[in-house]
Structures are given as structure tokens and as C-alpha cells.
Length: 118
Length: 115
Image 1 (cartoon, each protein chain N blue to C red):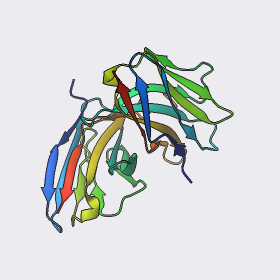
Image 2: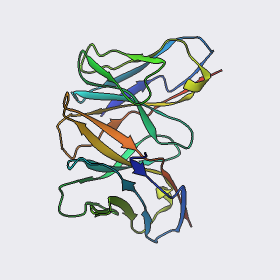
Image 3: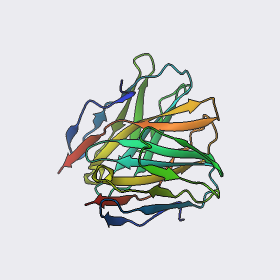
């Protein structure tokens, strides 16, 4: 079963408008972290925002905010005032912890391709 | 700021050839990871390491080997290249502090084609 589900393969938004990219996750561990990464056409992975499972408030980083609904197991990314440079793939990822060896791993969704139109 | 450095950036291999993808980080991170990204997909974990001398398999380890002799370096070895290994490979590192808000830092990737 998919641990991270991004149901929108592609999204379109007009420049200066807001857009929400969906992410749902599946875990039985009470301690986890959720990340969003941006991958532009040049290919690098750029960290955008983080939400911890125990964080009381939704995370915000500039134009990025995370709509975290723990009971629904969703962590949607909201981009306000879209810019042409926001056109990219966006990946949601969940950090899982293993008590054996104290390791951590990231599990990625399949991504959403965002296109910002002028 | 170098961060995570991967070499080479591009490589074409013939079926059956071997090669090593290099990865180095200068952030003194304990944890290092190798992922592969197939077209239109997210990243899948190949191998990871929690410190020098310690490695473990991820989700898709078959056909690959790793070693971690130093904190800084985490090379990925392909012994007998197969067309199914055509992919973009990413190396990443993190501090390894459990439950921290620090992300994994990624290299720029190695685009590998097996023909």
C-alpha cells in the first residue's frame, strides 16, 4: 500500500493565484515528519517546508504553507501568489523512524507537476 | 557551500559494464542515502548508511552495492549494468538527529543510461 499519495499528476494555476497540492499519508507511528520538495526541470531537489507530527501549528515558509490535518492524515502544500518560477514537480515525503539502529528514511509520493501560466 | 556533491553528472554505460557513482558531503552528517528516480516517479531508496562502516538495504537494493569507510563519502557501485538501471540517481545526507526538523540534503543527481 502506498504510504504517500499525491492524487494530482498535474495542476495548472494562473500567475499570482494560490494553489493547493494534495498529499495524504499512511502511518501507524505517532512520531513522523512530513516534507515537501520542489524539483525544477533542472533536476535538483529543493527542500521547501517541514511539518512534525507533534507540531501544534501549521508550518509556513514565505509563500509556502502546509495545511496539516492530522486526523485526516493529510499534509497539503499551499503556494500563495504563484510565480512563473514555481513551475516544477512537487514531491511530498514522509520521514519514518526505525527504533532498530535509530535510522530514518524518507518515503516519497509520485509527485505533482505544477504549471504556472502567465 | 558544497553540501552534497555527486560525480559524474551524466554517464552512458553498456550492458554488463561496471561503474561507481561517487557521493561526498561536507556537513559532517552521519546519515547518507542513495535514491533512484525513474521517469514520472518519486524517489526510491536503494541503500542507506547511519555512519561509517554501517550500511543497510532500502526498498530497491538489487544490482547495487555500497560502502561507507568515512563519514564524508558514500559511493554506490553497479557491478553488471542492466537496462533496468537506467535512471537518475540522487545521493542525500542528514544529521540523523531523530525527530528533528532538518531535511535531507540532496546532491544534484547523476543521470545514468544503460544501452
